Length: 328
Image (cartoon, rainbow, N blue to C red; front, side, top):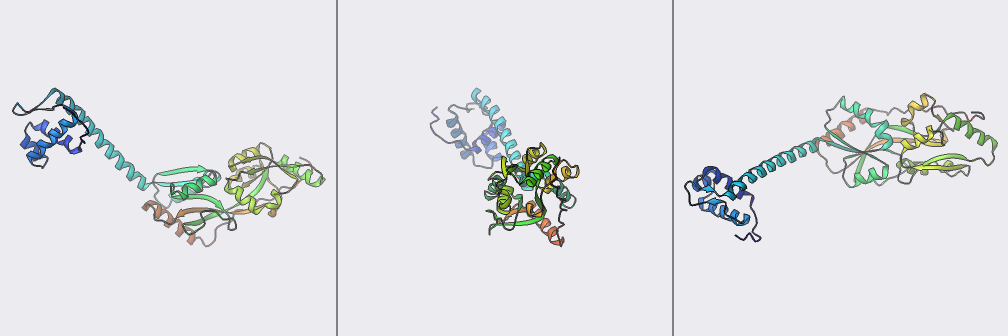
C-alpha cells in the first residue's frame, strides 16, 4: 500500500481506537458521533497513510491485524502523551498569566529589590516572579522589545533615556545618591594628592557606556570626570563589581548610596568630597503603556496608589564626607 503524501487527520486515530475497542463499525461510528460510511472512509484513509491494513474485515466482530495491534499500542501512548502535553501547556499558560516579569539593573536587584518586594508582599498577594538582572542598556532593550513587564532602574530628570516618551510610564519608588567612595587609606592618599597640588594622579573606576549609572555620571559630573588629575584604572558595567574593586583599595568609584550603606557604617568605605561630587538619583519603575496581564496591572495600580498616598518620598541621609587627610 503506497502512503504517498496523504495527510494524517488527528480524528482518524480516535476513530481507529473506537473501532478497535468495539469491534463493530456501527457502534464505533455511534460513539464517535459520525455516520458509519464516514468512519469507514477514515479507517481506510488511516490505513493508506500507515501503508498497511490495520483491520481484518473478514471476521465478526472485526479484529486488528498484527500491524493493527502494534499500531494501537503506539497510538494509545501517543494520545496519552499529547493529552499530557496539552495539560502541561495550559498549566504553563495559567502560570504565565499569574507571573510577573522584571528586569533590574544589578545594583538595584541586590540592594533594593528584595526589600521592596517584601514590602509589596505584606500588602498584596504576588505570584511567581521572573527576574532578569543586567546592565541598564540590556534591561532597557528587554522592555523596548516587551520581553519583560517592568524595569527597575536609576534615573535622573535631566538625563533622558529611550523609555522616557509617550510609549512608557514610570513611577518614582524612592531616591538614591551616587557618591564617590573608597577605602579610608585611599581617601588619605587622595587628600595628600590634592594638598600637594603636584602631578600625582588619583585612580578612579568608572562605568562603561552601557551602564545607566555611567550615563548619568558622565552627564552630571563632567568636572570631576574630566579632571586631568584623575586617572581611570578600571571600567565595568556593574556597580557591584566597582564596589568590590573599591573595597580592594584599587581606587575611587561612584556608587549608589543604597548599595554601600553597610560598608559606610562599618567604615570599610568612606565618601570623598562634598555635595558637588554627588549626584541625586531616582529609583524608577518603568512599564509600557499597552495593557499587560491582570496581575501586572493590579501590581501597577497598587504601587501607583502607594506612591500617591506618600505625600513625600523619604530622602536617604547623606553620609558625612571623608576628610581628605594627609596621613592614612
